[in-house]
Amino acid sequence: MTHSTKNENLTLVIGGTGKTGRRVADRLTSQGRAVRIGSRTAERPFVWEDASTWGPALEGADAAYVTYYPDLAFPGASETIAEFSQVAVAHGTRRLVLLSGRGEEGAVASEDALKKSGADWTVVRCNWFNQNFSESFFLEPVLGGELALPTGDCVEPFVDADDIADVAVAALTDDRHVHATYELSGPRLLSFHNVADELSEATGRTITYLPVSTDDYRAALAEAGEPQEFADLFTLILDGRNASLVDGVQTVLDREPRDFSAYARAAAATGVWNV
Image (tube, rainbow, N blue to C red; front, top):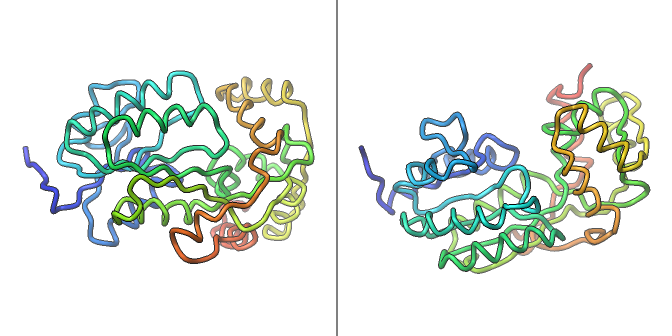
């Protein structure tokens, strides 16, 4: 078995096939850094529910990008992050960059657990991603032409996964970001009415937004076989705790974050919303 040295800059990217993980892996690879994808189907499988997979995945890695599924706010997440971060440090993986949730009290417990491990940590807090509409659970509703969600008239500063990946890579590769917590958002607040208008313009189709009750949405999640706890994440929008702009992207990258309109045009050009 070969062992990677620190000089090889091997980074474990947990969730390396996901929205941000895939982008982080691509950016690190383009910089000439060695990357190991952490996923269930990887050569060295990484499974959050199976701690025996963590050590082999961490072997030889000096850094790790840590994304937790389904969400850091879910029960048991902080205990799992505490155990993982201790295993990581024991394996010499000292640089840990955690993707966390902005405004999620449950996620703060996981952040604290990571910090107590003695790692060189960075926390990147984000709210809802633009890419949820093209690569995740909002894709099917967009294709169907109707966003039926329990979000009322609330607003959200949607952040782009490319911006998140750029910040994460900076944190993984630059010592200036050790022991920093960054909150990221997009450049403006959008309601889901606004989002439907933006998507309609980008796709040339009519996308409508239909406010529904949380109970109705829970029922829809259950019918789709998705965790009903996802409905709880909408409370982060409903109570307005993230209805403000923050400057993490500007602070780390010295540029403005990507606007939803630019995202929507680029996503539409890929054909992902063609029906």
